[in-house]
Image (cartoon, rainbow, N blue to C red):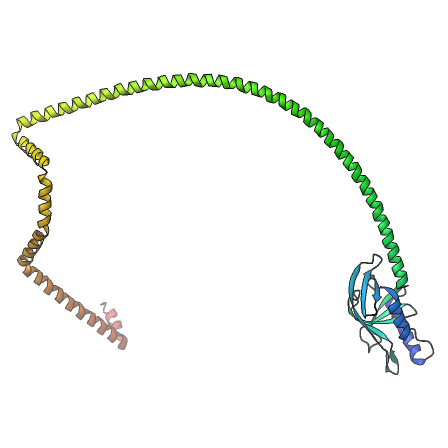
Length: 361
């Protein structure tokens, strides 16, 4: 375990530092005043937290700062900062000059940084009034911003050279790939020509074969057309003769029925009279005219019949009306008795018990 990772030794160092500061026997280990301003404004400070995170801080004159990952130097955070002068808290403890950070703090919980020169650490107090509550971040390097810029430029140049090298390799690979593609395309064109010629020959063979098959099919269709034409003509002739035979048979049947009807009428003069009368009526259209006249007088006839029926059955209607009125009166009296019984049952419930005990409803 390293010195800075040992909590007990860190606390002991901090106590010794504060002891010598308060007694005046040793020079303060804190970086304060102008030295602290120069340290912050002229340098890039790389720290390592207790969790093992390594980040580089650059503090700017406009009171802003950026935090970069180390060593890749990707921007991971930024914020603003302020510097505060130290002061004497009590006879045994003096708070040194410190800075206050707003923004990214490399996973450090508290915003105050106190810089110590020996050993090179940053004390991150949890409470400015309590010297025993703090975290520690190790300062692993302090480089001037000029040196940092030089390192960045060298890295950029190196990365550019590496990119150029990779670009050349990629270009060579692309050239080889293009040559390979050109050869493949030439081979494909050659194969395509061969295939096209084969397809042409096959197409010519298919055309000749299709023409031969088309001629055969045309001959077959011609023969089928002739056959179907003869078959349909024969079928029409057969159907015609069947129809003629059937019509002839139907005419014979009708004639036979007429002869039988005439014979029947000759033997039954009453039926002949009715038949002749029906023919005469149908021929003159008198049945329709009779129906029309009957419809004109039907309503008058109905009213006359109804009036006569009412007069002849007037006594029955009056008796029915009287009986209906009496039934209605009885129903009203029964309803009143039921209501009276309900009122009595509500007032005198024992009546219902007496009736039930006697077996009466």
